[in-house]
Length: 123
Image 1 (cartoon, rainbow, N blue to C red):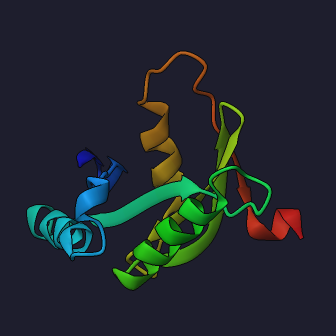
Image 2 (image 1 turned 90 degrees about the vertical axis):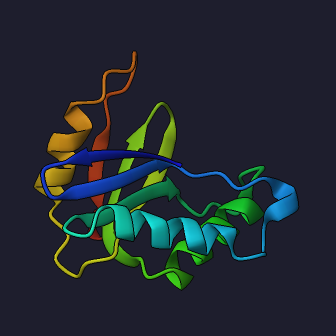
Image 3 (image 1 turned 180 degrees about the vertical axis):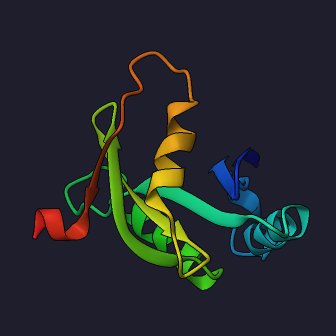
């Protein structure tokens, strides 16, 4: 797991469990460790949006369900970058999109220029 902190956020932008160790509680323990390491921070994560036509549609569904099972909640907020759309979840009810956007501005990767939208923008 790789975690970025910014103001009041803890953002695990990379979490991977070896396939042979999945469904054995390691992912949940990783999330518990994250919460323990950053107790005063809001836990925010993003992941590829559900898309039945995507090659990895089943993986996307499993990932989304994993975060729901581990205490994350839908924010209704999304972003798109490098041709992929992502959903944003937060453990807290008071997700702050402006703080999240400010954090994303600190990421210096060529071609990384996220566009943000709310679910209501797409309905």
